[in-house]
Length: 150
Image (cartoon, rainbow, N blue to C red):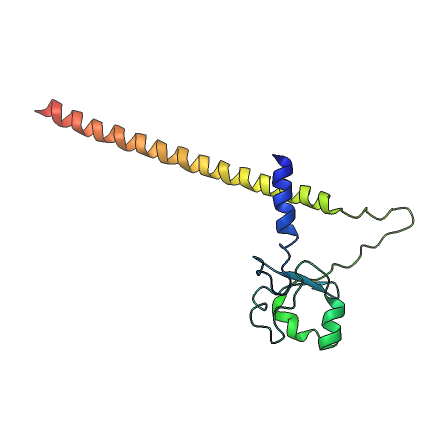
């Protein structure tokens, strides 16, 4: 089961790569000069056609066609590279995260979020049930009072 979930997450994480002439992916993320851009909406309106290779670094393609000015890409920017952490001689640099580790981390985060959502839903249901019991008790107290008053 875990392998199936990880395989599905892997396909989503890779952006379900869509090349020219293929179906457009649910989202198309490309990298240019280390920045991540969501060009999903641009796929159908780009004057050069759908030239995007989703999930890849398209720096050389972009620079070859548009030059170094990235201003036109600003509306699609979703992430910039974070500066490298400063390390000293006594502190080794952290190991790079492998794609499988990233998937495991994403799976764990989504699993925790789902558990939190289910807990909130459980609390809301318990509160609703308590209110319904209270309403039912009130209704029958009123009916009993009317019945004994006759």
